[in-house]
Length: 335
Ligand code: SAM
Ligand code: DTB
Ligand code: SF4
Image (cartoon, rainbow, N blue to C red; front, side, top):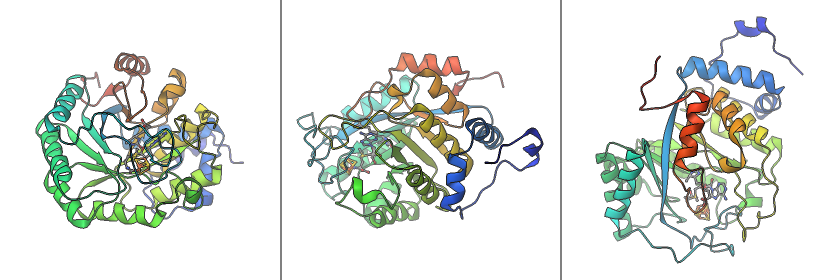
């Protein structure tokens, strides 16, 4: 085991590489925590000075009834949790834009909209999605969509509507994927990411821990992400929210320090990407979240709910940021 000591500070902390091996990533993930945190902080403070955090708000526009069988997801029609019967906001462009405006007034600078689809289909619902994207951009917010697979044409229409980012997670390692999802392949996921990039939309791509995967799987997921050239502009790190009625409902809560390790390793591997501390923050506790911010998380989901599950409330998050001494992107600071 290599223990870093002060003289090792001579190394160049920020390295942009796209040829990581799984062994190298695993070595980082498993480092003594103090060394991992120190290196992640060095990278973060050098690459993204100022501890500025992006606040992204989420809204589920189309909830439940999804054809895919993702074992973690309460919205899959294969899971008895399937959350249907909620108001379908697809036709309600104005309602969505009102929610975006409220998110902006509360301090968000990105608005993310989710559709529980296997893939985008053309037609009235897609036209409504495009109108929502342009409406969100007109409010001065970044717009992000997550809606499953898409065609090149659909990606280019989303780009024309002003879409900032498309979220499409790889979720876990290629090796563990078929234990979690059987209705699509890893390769299909990668192809969608390529179409999004080719259309000039930024990538939001990350994963989930706490699904029964090994450390090697986590290293393998991070290795795939870190070898995308250029790196995904944002990388959500989710802790499983074990929802009743999903096959993963009985899995134990993620150890908070494992989230800290994932964030720190992602920061070292992808120095300038936004590393978003995503689902599972309610289970993390204040101190572990602060460690994640220190280790280089520079974005959180902000607002009382995620897609179908809850998130810390806005007041609690404001206190968290102030206690940690970090600032939202738009805030004035003394630096
Ligand atoms: N259907 C689209 C897709 O799969 O890309 C978009 C919606 S899907 C709900 C977006 C992401 O939410 C998933 O890729 C997964 O990473 C995350 N997610 C879903 N359920 C989760 C859970 N129970 N715990 C943690 N993350 C979850
Ligand atoms: C991401 O990586 N996490 C968000 C967002 N991207 C779309 C979704 C988390 C969903 C958690 C479970 C739920 O609320 O349904
Ligand atoms: Fe849930 Fe997305 Fe999987 Fe559908 S594709 S089940 S919405 S994670």
